[in-house]
Structures are given as C-alpha cells and as structure tokens.
Length: 127
Image 1 (cartoon, one colour):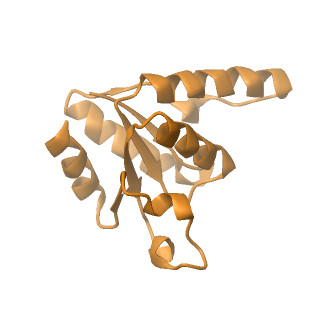
Image 2: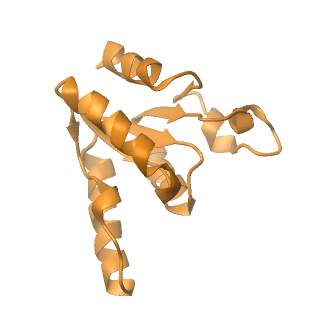
C-alpha cells in the first residue's frame, strides 16, 4: 500500500512517527516532503509538482491536524481524486464547528481522534 502524509512543519516529528509505523508494516511513502526546503519560487514549484504526483500515486491520503494551507490544498486534491482519506485529529478542534473545515466531515473522510497506533491499525485493516 502506498500512502502520502500531509500536515504542517510543526508536526514533523509526528509525520515521521506515522511514516515509520506504516513503513514497518511494508507500506511505501510516495514522498517525504519534510526533507524539502524551498529557497525560492522555482523550488516551491518543483516541490509542489512532486507533492501533486505523490498524492496522485498514493492509495491512502493521511492528513495530520493541525495542518497548513499546503496540506489542506493537498486534501482537496485527494478528495477530487477520490482517494481513501484518513484525518488524524491531534486535538478536539475537528469537532468544533467554529474551528473545523467543512471538508473534514465529508463522508469519505475517516476521522481518527485517538492515538497513533489506532490510526495505523485503521489504515492497515482496510489495506
């Protein structure tokens, strides 16, 4: 199973931990954006193209909250591509109508608001 994890730079340690857990089970990360850093607009475009390709090539899209604008844009790509989507909520904001996003609550988005091992288990039981 191929996966892509979207989040913000604030969550890099958690992104690495989830990726490690999935990789240990034989899964493949389509792109590790945490190792990319843009120095200029040309770099940003190249990174964006790699991330778009990574979402396209994934079987599963994982969004770790809180997420930034890039990660939410990637969620839009995953929704449009009808990907299998898991949203990992690290706080209760996802359940607060004033703080959440409409798109987090679409029928094909599976929200996991417990621990990381539960997230990994839920993904692996389907894939």
